[in-house]
Image (cartoon, rainbow, N blue to C red):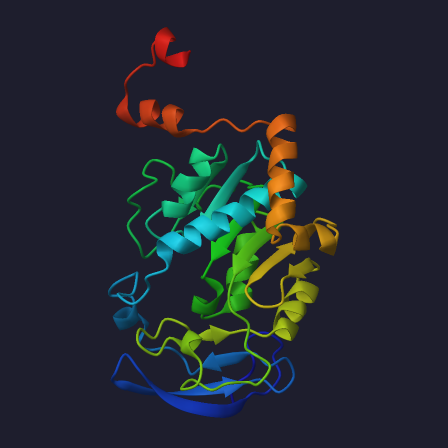
Length: 270
């Protein structure tokens, strides 16, 4: 019998499917919280032979979209002058974008080469605190979600993350693309109830748009404040207000001189 990795209740076999065009595997679902997990994923070394799947064409678009939402949330609810970490940040596109916007972001990814934010890697061997950790399209990769979340909470009391929640009609692996059978990296599928169980376990507040974008935090934030960051008109107003109140200066120039070893002249500072 396999126990649910979220609430520890007994799970039930719910589907079988073929991943990476070769491995037939079993999926299990928890009747209590709805969480779906695979059998023990023996295929992960093969699945991560390429950290970013050939069919994952959304890396740039996600970075742009999540960058806007993250900026709005930071401006409205967090200390913008603090340090932030993007966990599972891939090639560093998101971190570079956030640093270009003036936010002191750092990258951690144990599978993917950092190509765009070199020199700004987070060192998890150092017990450093971050104002917020982002983890976009990462939670579905967690083999032991509670252990991984507990690890992240050692570095921050707030985790902003994206993962698609299982639709209400409970589709199986052959009926919903997010099971990602082609690359076999998605081994954990969440429901809203599963996320509330996680929040309760770690004594956190959960804010969510109900489908893909979620925040676990120790902060007491109004749900409406989280909802506002998704509304384009309100987002535009927020940007105008905070542009005047707390102008963000891009870190691009500073990062260039830090990485190149060159010295900025007085003329360039002006």
